[in-house]
Image (cartoon, rainbow, N blue to C red; front, side):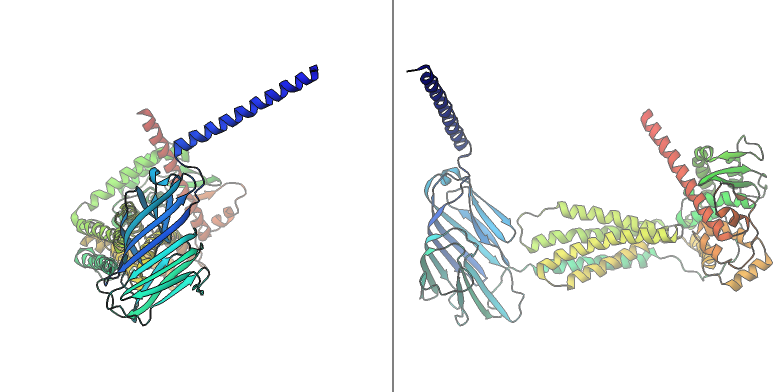
Length: 620
């Protein structure tokens, strides 16, 4: 042998060794996988015999027993037998001597056999029993008998098939029909034969292909089925709960949730001794930082300070005259706090004002609160607040109960409480926000109020629609879902109206509402009379218009009237087109500028307080 031949021989031997190594490793790997999982990925199998028996009872239940013999060409990890879902539930499922599980996937129940001993290569017989419990018929003209003996979705051919149907002895045979075939009803006499013995039908066939379906159907006299599954009461109970929640809300509102009634008045001038801070506290029972802005504007109108915009949305306050001794104590306190250690004619920047706003807010609120500390001056009575919470909880419980009732309607063995708990918490949260927004309706910009109340109301309605849909899926009737929607909306409305004012608070707020309504609804003739008698009338009412978030509306009332330009508000920022308008007495431009000033004050306050909270928490 030549050297070249030796080289080729060695090469062949080397290749053979590599090939043998690969084969050994592959076989070993396959054995490991087979031993680990007990099956290959090949889930194909053959059905040699399929013996199906259904005994029909008068309560519209079927006692089903199946004996299925399969031939497994390989070890399987599992095998699944489908039971078509319908207007029924199945219970008491058992596979004799075999581990199995039951699940529902869309329109099918799946009986999954996962016993490794019963899934090894070879022939196995599975004995399956279960009970089909049909729901009560919704059709009032007849009772329906509908039984699928073999699902058209069956994917495995059957060598031998036998179906035995045992009907009640008094079963009416007149309308009993069966449909069989792969694609709709076909002539299947070459595959199937049947015989009738008393009340028993026996059907048999061989070489049944996949996708071959067999269905029995009959329209029976109305009332034929006796005591079928009927949990319709659960759906009715859902409607009753919503009616109860709405009725409870109405009773609570009538019992302690209504404001005392007083004759409406028209107030055309500021109420003596009542500042904008009083208005805020009477309506809301507390003050926010935006309630301080009208007081600052009042100091400007009184000649105590000047608001200067030196750059877009950049402001400074210039110290002028000290407030009169006749001014409210907290007005003088605001002035003192703003201009502490500042000489007359000098200005303070927003950054310096921001750190003082918290102290100003606390001081003003405590001063105003001391004048309304009696029980009769509370913005909302304790009993009305309690009634509101009871109403909100009642509505939320009604919403949360619907998924539970739907599960009971469907006879679900395990009721999941996660969804009801989530719906309850969401409902309580949304309704609390809605009622709080409603309480602040006179203290919010109207556009902001409409947007926020609409957004949260839409969330609440979506929740009602969702639980209504759950009910609709059960009985396909719109009556209860519509009842849920109407009763839920009514109960929410009653909850909003339920924060009743104490008597003296209601009396004073009635007068304040008279002022607010005049600001909103005053006619040009009314404005002309007031302006003629008092040229400064616009500015006297301006802080109250701001407090009621009506300042643009108030300014629009003065179109065509000559109003003196404010000497307490100045724009020196270059490029601002509104500079000339304000200096010429354009009050609509002025109110838009004041709105930006208010937003800036709120922004500075929020930024400063966030910083403080951050540093305090970091310090801990």
